[in-house]
Length: 545
Image 1 (cartoon, rainbow, N blue to C red):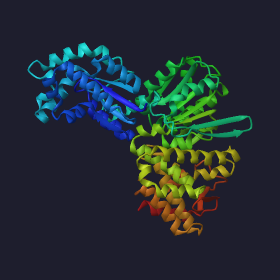
Image 2 (spheres, rainbow, N blue to C red):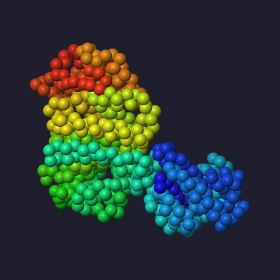
Image 3 (tube, rainbow, N blue to C red):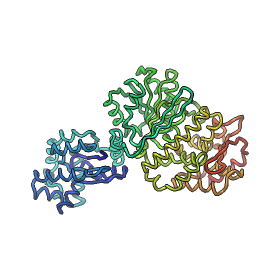
Image 4 (cartoon, helix red, strand yellow):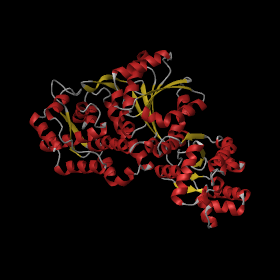
C-alpha cells in the first residue's frame, strides 16, 4: 500500500507539500480538488455551490477512491474530505494518512495570499467574506477530532517546505510504506573468528528494526545516538516505531558536524549511559552518518569494555564505507581519527531509502567513496558508475541498492583478510592521506569528508601518473567521473607547507614515511612508502591552481 494521503485545513500546505513529497519519492501526485474540477469542468468551489455540500462530499469520496486507483501516489485531499467516515476508513486501510496541522491564523493568512494571487474567491466558498477567519475557525473545531485520527501529525507552522516534506517521507519510511517487495533483501556477513557482523541491505528496511532487535535477543531498552540533522526527521518516527513494538528507547542527540567527533562529546555520551544505568547487554544504536557511526561505535567499544553495537547509517558515505568494518574513533585537534578502536557492529541495517532525505551536497560526497572502490578494487563497478550518471543523481532505488550492496561486499572482503589495518586494508584509504590532512587543516569546517577524499584521489592519481604506474587516460577517466558526480578536483590557495605537515601526522605513516595508495589501473591499486617529497609537492601544486 504505497500511498500517502495528506489531510488538513485549507491553507495547511497539502498541495505544495504533496508535490514536493512526490518529487522526492518519484511518485505520482494527485490533488483531489483538481481531479474534481477536471471531472466536472468547473472550480471545486463552484461544484460545492451548485450541488450542495452533501452531494459534494459524496463526489469528493468518489474522487478519493479514483485517485488511489494506483500505488506509488501522494494524494492531497480536500479540507473536508475527512468528514465522511467512509473516506477516513478508506485512507486508513489503503495507505498512510498524514495530518498537516497548522494554526487557524496561519491557515487563514495562506488562504488570503492564495486568493489575492488568483483572484478566485469562489474556489473557497466556505471561508469567503469578512468573517472568513471565524468561519475557518468553526470548520476547524468541527473537524479537529477527525483530522487527529490520522496515523501521523506534522505541524506546518514554522518549518520550510523542504523540511516538512522530508518529515513526511521519514514517517512513511518508518511506517513501512516505502518497503518494496519487488526489491530483494540482501545480506552480507563478515565473520572474524567468533565475531559476526551482519549487514542487511533493503530499500525501506528500517521498518523491520524491531523485528531485527527481537531476533537478536536484545532487551527492551535500547540507546540511540544521533545528531540534530538526522534527529530533525527521524527522532519521532523511530521512537514511535520502537515504542509500538514494546521497546523502551532512549535517545541522545548531539550537534551535527565533525566538531562533535571529540573526546568531550564522547565523555558526554558515556556520562549519559552511566546516568541511565545502561547494562552490558543493552545495545547502542548509531543512527546517522560517519560522525555518529565512528563516535557511537567508540562509545560502544569503551563503555563496560564493550556493549552491543548496531549501525543504522543514514548517509551514502556511511552506508558504503564508515559503518562497515569496525573502525570507530574520535578526532584529536592535531589529526583525524587518531583515537579509536576496532569494534565490529553485530548488525548493520542499511536502508538506501534514507538517502531520499539527504541534502544534495551530503548525498554527493558519498560517491567519492564509491568511485574509490571502483578505482582500487572493481573495474566493473567503475564502468557501472560511468554509464549511469543520470540515475545516480536521481537516486534510483534499484541501482542504489545494487551499488551499495556491492561496496559492502568489497569492503567486507578486505576486512575479512585484514581487520586491523596491517596491510591490505590500507588500500581503502585511497585519497585519504591528502583528504584527512585537508579536513584537519581547514578545521573540519569547509570540506565534507567525501569532498576532501575526491581531491585526494586526484592528487594520488597525479602521483601515480608521474611514477609511471597509471596511464593519463585512466587518470582522466577518474577525474571526469568525479566531476560528473559534482565532486571537487581542486582546492585553490591551500597552504602546501601546512598540508604536508598534517599529512606527516597521518596514522598510516611508518618510520616517518607517508604511505600512499596509488592506482595502477582501473580496479587495482598498491601501497607505496617511497614517494619523494618533490613528487608530492608537484601533485599538490596541480590541484592548487
